[in-house]
Image 1 (cartoon, helix red, strand yellow):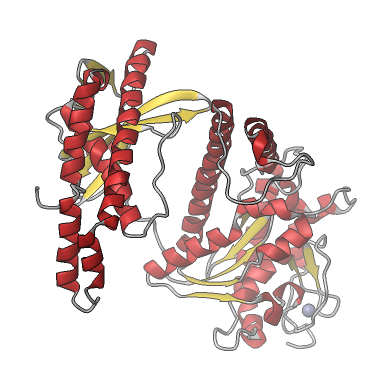
Image 2: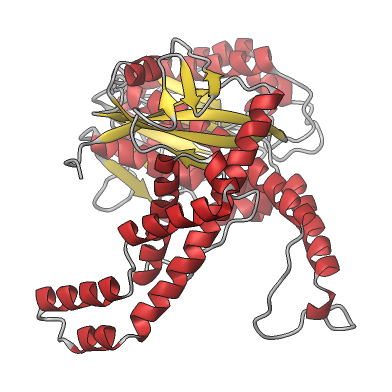
Length: 512
Ligand SMILES: [Zn+2]
């Protein structure tokens, strides 16, 4: 075996005609059948290993004698021909015996299928998996070569494989160009079903390190964040951003629930013996038959979930980079999804604020920044004014307007601002510091407020769901079902200017 080198993968879409699709489908199907055959044989051999005397002996060696023990286990496996190599031999024999399989697959691809099955069995052997899974038609979706010299091969502008020629769609993406200029170890063909259409991709397993994006700029300062269901306010040393949070994301809950119910119906229809006459499921471990239609529904559901997750990840990633640009020392309230769900319903979890926060934490710490996530309960920033006055606000009140000192500021932005002055040790607000820095930061906060409002008026739509429409929310109340007469006022840029005119002055305030 060649020495191990680092690898990375680039994926390139392929052009396929309907006859290409038919050819690959037949090859994939023979691959799947071969995989299942090898898996079944390997499973039997693994059982033989475990039942063998040699295995019993190996087990009796105390764990302190590590080396002797693993040599003994190795002997038990060898005696029962349980190895990658032996399963490859078995796969070859099986393919030749079936003729049909051999006519569809080349020797390298056959070997790699055996290795794939062996790896699954190895996981079972080491207790990393509870069982091995035989693949049904929807589940076996890739085939790969062993080298880029024989079998499945990359030619420079596409894939060739035993008479099949597939042109690639090569973009100018630097990630792909980097892959193409690297040494290709081997090629994997991957099927993806997107919107119920079949696409094939070439995955080039390349030698070396993946393409490094030019580093996102990371700021040095402190950033306070207020993450809400609808918007996020980010206050850096010199700049304030107030923007919708994952607003492009819509809940797929309904679609998913619909498919789940369909799956449940299909499962019942396919397995009437597993249910009592009153419709309840019979107790005990039972085998459930899965029809092709059931599997199709399951595939559809998976596809929706996959898309949703990918979209969310990319939106979160953008927002994380946007935040780090303002500074890498992060201070934010710990978001409680549970609290969100109490207010906005269970489905709000799809925005996954916690995964946003943990991604932010990871990246900030990687960049050498510090991260403080403090609990809401102690600080209650959303109720707190610079003057120290605490005032309970309803969620619909989007602007903080203090009855004592007269301070007026968009509430999320004020919360984010105050976050910057939370003491990491005590997790309490250093009111004095917050007050002293305010006049220097006020313009930046007001700019952030105004930019956010402009952005929301520009992109305003008449979306029905307030949760999904950040633009609506930015101008007013996140849970309002009824439009409040004053809501427009709150977001109008003129009003912001006016706010500025009567801006908070620490000297005027009682506490200042
Ligand atoms: Zn006040």
